[in-house]
Length: 257
Image 1 (cartoon, rainbow, N blue to C red):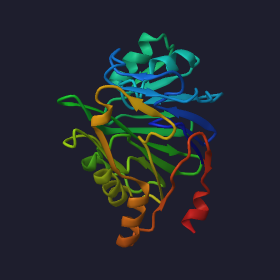
Image 2 (image 1 turned 180 degrees about the vertical axis):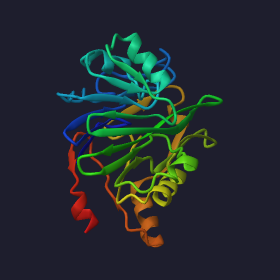
Image 3 (image 1 turned 120 degrees about the vertical axis):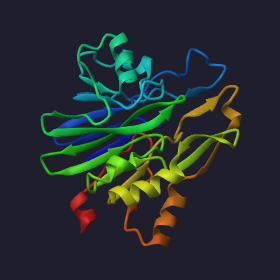
């Protein structure tokens, strides 16, 4: 399995002869609701758009997961599987094959099985998506959810995974309102799914943020603190800190040994 992180929540997963692009933001600024004055994410330069994508997988419809300028540049013939809100974004941009993934759905793309779980809280009551990908050629499994909201009720029934991509830091607005709950979620995922490898997501990497609310966002914790905590608790989990656009090759048999 190969994993490439492109800052924020964007991942390229290569396994089972498939290349799956998750929550792509690769070009242009990140702006919510056409309000750059509120918060804006900027890249020092556009990321390299990966070629030969077999599937675009969107966990949410917000711009940091379904980024319109990036989706505009990708091939509209690539299948998109997405949360209901993410599907609306893709459909509005002219994608030819868009599949809505509701909580509890299981679909297959050749030798990849994708299960949908309850994910992040967005707004007052809406819950977006989390995913477990199973690559049937070798049975490896990967969990992905970008805001730190594990679906404990249903994940407890699926057994273990090999890799978990989840936040490991906490981000709050004005020190009160949770935006990302990595400090809570990562230990829960470790206990629920017993992954052999964990990687943090939702981190800035090379991205910088400005705007009215940017100074009010505070971040605490992260991969180093979680690694120390797991060591103290006797958890045999390898935590890898990704570097933007550097490919991570996982030999999961070696990890198991």
